[in-house]
Image (cartoon, rainbow, N blue to C red; front, side, top):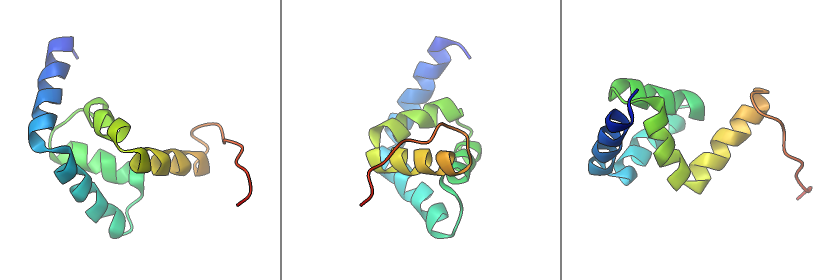
Length: 85
């Protein structure tokens, strides 16, 4: 994908409103869909590159943390050492 195409998609994302995107993803999550699958499904439905949705994930610390936690459970990333709470 060319840089100009990515910029166009980011502009489209900004127009879509990041709050609305989070609401749509949250509906999937509430229905029991894993976070990663919910994000990918949203990107597919709206014909967006997954990398563009990454911008939304970076803006939401909660979503970012939940996706990372899910990726840890699936052994997709190295587990972080956490203090017991």
